[in-house]
View 1 (cartoon, rainbow, N blue to C red):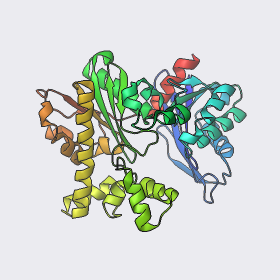
View 2 (cartoon, one colour):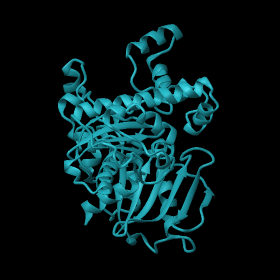
View 3 (cartoon, helix red, strand yellow):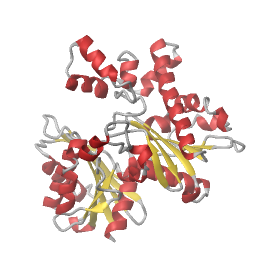
Length: 398
């Protein structure tokens, strides 16, 4: 069965067509600047040339229409008709407490997703627009929602509750939800497979380190803690997000700089993280690494502080699970930055970790980077969220 995977943002739409039986990618692409002047679709069939077409895209319905036309194009298309697409899998950022697993999309499910919009105001409305557009253009094709938050719904209360008045949880569902769940699920399962171990018998820490970054503790096949919270702002230092800070800093800076709450949230979400810490050098770790290697203070302090926070979370999650069998690095930085991996693992000697320097210098490959005698296995496992969404979709519509 061919499955179309849709990842809808507020002004962008990523897509992949995947054969669920062979798990091979058939085509992929991206619609950019939806609703903005200069919109374009990038389309590439597997093994073929990349095509870029600048064309008006006033809304997501038009974007989905262009995606379907590209997939059916006489010259470069990969299907003859929409009947060859067996299902559509949609990435949905926030499922709140309503969804602990992927689900077939119905009218009731759409209403339940909409009720979570307050928890992800930038993402959920865009996800719903994508669902609505697909349902209009493909009314007879089954749709599945795969939630970023679902994998983390197995966390115990002591992990997801905050030290706030309990009424805020009861009235507004203020609690830790966690994100990147599709990636954390895929990578932890793949790590167990790679090591030839039973997933349900392992204690695994997954470090999803990209522009957005989060860590999860996966014990006996269930997520027991994760670093992002009510929103994707909590936890690690990220590309432009602050991660954990003393909440009183918000009031302190607001008074000093005469800023509103909304302005302060913009600072924390878009002007902080490694971008802010490097004094606006970059949110891209390739630029930061060059600065680090040149011995510049802004590059050195930023990468060291980032790695320190990652190592601290690994220590905390080792305590949460009373041990760890494997630590996995994934996503853009985790897969491609040997320096960050080294700086993190240099702090984990107490776990009996020993690194293989040569293997750690590889980029973007699935590889064990610890030595054979390391007490804890350290792996690089490239994430594949689209394949994970396709698998979830196939399992529900067969």
